Image (tube, rainbow, N blue to C red; front, side):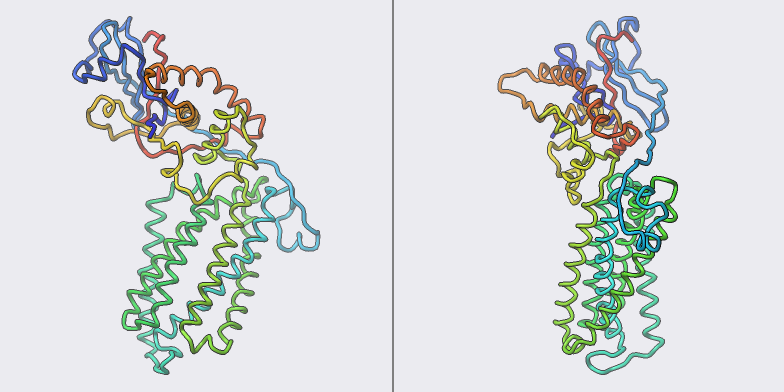
Length: 450
């Protein structure tokens, strides 16, 4: 695993041989004092904190590491909409699509909506089948012919809805920062979580005495799924918008969704009226499972057609891997097609640990009050980490020479990487690289006097 700083100019552990070797081997040699001749001190790296302060590590003329504190402000990148095109017959355009289509939206908008429609249809079919099971569990048209009191059924129904509402509170309060970075992944996982919640609903007829806990768990899971779904959908809608027409895009999406809802509910009712469905729990369950799998497949197909121009960690890895290995940078279409929307960052290779603090390098305690790095610094770190992964350390080769080679390569080739990104259609203002809230390391030039 490669350990790099989230704000690491160079990305690798900030040592140069042989001056740092003695300090790293024996931590007591490092000092927090400001002694020594500051005129001869050379900056090594700095760690940024959330309060704006920066801890700078300096190497004096006696190869002794010193620590100085100073203020340092972070910078942020902003996003811009991009111009894209699509086409559709005029008769349909005026009713279901935003005004000015296709110029007013991105080029993947229509393909996404066409795949979202059957996705929503199958979702509402599943809803119809699951609702039937829930009603049977509370005694409304149950398989045994028994009935439940209206008040008891209402109390159970309201209780399970109330418990499930906590799921959305949890997602909105705890995971609100996730969705801008990877909306495709979280939109897909929202359906996985919602499917798990439906399984709890389907088991309620088998255990009617446990209706409240089972239905509550089902509602909780589905509420968590909605908590992931809604913010992800908003990011996707914003991706479609290019001319300040986000509201209209959302309104037209409602047209698609309501049309899918009506069709799905109708098909669901027809399925429930089919002989054998109502009287056989196993047939109902297998029917739900088949439609649900079809629903998940449609969802996945609709998400992989999205072509984001923003650069997140996954797409940044694809870009730097291509440049390090082949000295080329793919365009946004090819990059999105090569992105695995289901993979988590921790399972990607090379495995990178961002923001390793100097205290950990020296065997001490970690700092805890640090902030995230600027996107361009993270991109530099990723480039160097992939260079190190591509050029593995050879046997009997000095590790410090290896790190110096990576820094030299970074200095020589990173500007070309940025130029090729711009030539391939990427915009530096749309680089949004978020890393865990770990230390921010800034590698200084060792030939620079403090």
